Length: 416
Image (tube, rainbow, N blue to C red; front, top):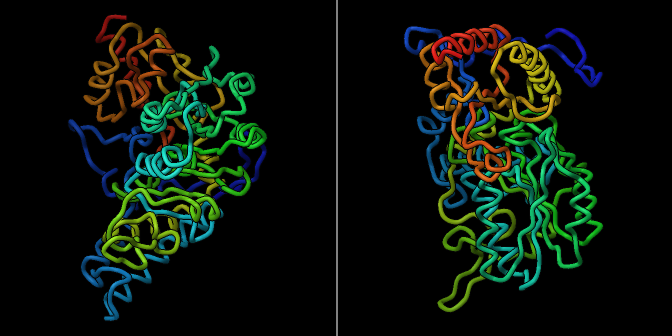
């Protein structure tokens, strides 16, 4: 890797993207007789051989349940499983006991909903979020309204950035939870989570971050941002689908009642009552997703080897390049601020995003189209859908050139 500097002047190493791409067999695929250009990373990332091999090794060498037996296979599986949790904890500077394995970030939000909000909040209490949230950070809290809990939302300005003054305006003594996305999955907006967290804590409220679009892309330290809870999904950071994490401060998790109940999350069971297991197992019911958890650890190993500052620097270089190139295309409207994460949503004239994405697919380019699980944000922007290109460690400027060339062809197809 070559030395360089990020746009913020932080020393970084240039990623060896050619070497990285060799670890991803799917990138050699051809789609419609064109070499695949995968630009749907905000939805899910591709998986390197190191992660795929971790899955294969588990199933072919030591497949067994964990924490239930004394035989060799179970001991090996238990060690690998616990090591994966420790790796993920270290990745975000958390404790082992603060990492709860879940299916995805959505399940993590639902644990906070049921184990904290519905269990402890009272009618008249308030939750503050924002209009730019993914549905996973909106829909769970709507259930709280049945208990008389009020939902409030901070708006965005014309640049796609939060109107920060509204946090102070909306905050009252009844505000109990503030929950925001770190990076918007539509706009790419990077929200000032440390500042928002201070506002929440000064008002005596809990603070939760949806970090699904930030932890895979940049250095993230739960102690530095001082969040009470954080949710993220493994499949957006090279790991398999079906595995994610809920981070919670140890003291809070200790004090919360478990949401899901059954085997393994218990310490002792009697016919009429039970006592709960130690953290983090208290929130994990039944046989866990062992294989995908171990592969999640392998994904973290891969990212740690690259260095998250280097991952972020690579993406910022791509963003700077693609923003410049897209600005040269007539009839293209880009949503969100200039400085952003590796997510760019746009529309080409009055062409529906699905039609634009279909033309790009004809050129072997995979992008997302639709409302991106952010329908309230779409309404706020005055649109029903958008096309989204999102980037990761294996993307190149040459692929961006192909994207822009294909968009120019789309202009011709739709006679813009």
